[in-house]
Image 1: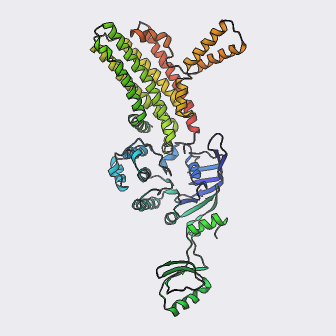
Image 2: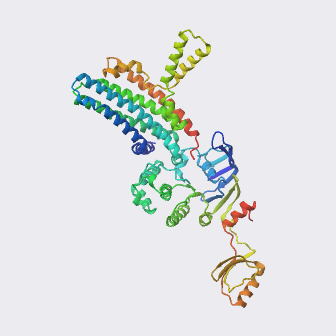
Image 3: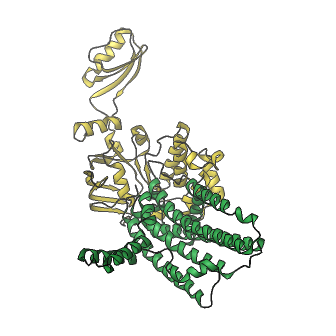
Length: 302
Length: 267
């Protein structure tokens, strides 16, 4: 669906300013039907990569192909593409309804007013239909962006920080809508800093650092359980065993990690002390753990 | 394609209707024109009434030229500065089509305003019992054609530079300025100063004058019509000439603006 090979993107932000190396040999592949997440620190090159996939930026060198074609501004390729930008740079002089209708009409297909009303209703925008975007909050503008993405059943969606500024109810609604779109076969490429959200949605992840992909893998491979540690939670009556690490206390409840070889010692300890154990399982590694390990540790986790 | 053009033009009309800058510009000019039209209300002389009509009509047409330029400038600069074109160009709507829509919408709005000004001229003639002259139609059409060229030129400048610089270039560094400077250098040469630098400058200003677009390409030939509002037989030919000039200028500016727009970073 998307192929990027050795993409370099260098540009200046002004005539006299230094050249910025936004992408530094980025290579990745997004397969049809993927829910693909781009993860990285601020300035890692995630948005620049997305701009290159969208044809908004032409790489200095390297190859980018989307659905087998080189993306260019306004090309027919976009009949099958929807894009939600990170910053709400919309047509602020239009009202919520006008903007939604305008963006959907740019696909050259008629969308029934009822469908627009339905989507605005679903996103909680129905009562603000006549409000100019200039007077809308950031979250409301983001919802307009989401509405225009959901109106057409496109094969490919680009989402740049999609849930930024949204209220929790809409985040949940939007997440469900994305899962529904993904189930019907659409490919989704998403940039996000909310790693827990990526864990819930994505099936493949690329971690970008310094303008290149440092890891690209199935999400499940990045979340394999750690075979060396057990996560435990128990009711403590004061002291805790010295092999217990990463301790968190919540009233009587203590959470922490114990090494594999101390598991039986821990069971003896709790049994002898008459402590109630709430949890004892192989410790799962979150995407956040993987991300920190890879970006800060300078190498793949596994 | 027609659907896309229509969608863009409708959005552009919403922009013109809601642009506070354009509204303020229009109000100031209408206020000034309104103040100018008060004295003729208290005169009974037919000649004075005709002069007043001619002044008001001329003012309104001048305003239309400025307003057309402002529309061309703001429709481009506002979208570029708000960075919202990425919402358009990531849909199957090419920069060529968007630019054409912006141009056509400004031309249509300008035509509508020209019709209003023409209707006002005719209405004033009827109210003041001044004969309705064909010159009103000629001046309106000529102004409209000049507006088309101005819109295209300002749209081009807006894609190239900051709108303040674009307005400065259009208002100050225009063909008329370089014609005046060329005439001044010619006068200096004829008065005995035959310095090669001055001759080179004279040529330089001459070519700049030829290169830069003119508001009224046949202004010298049609100035009599503007003064008397009469169109002598055979003078209507300047309208097709003006149309040809406006179309050629618009096509040139459109191609250059499109080239610039496609090379800009819309992020």
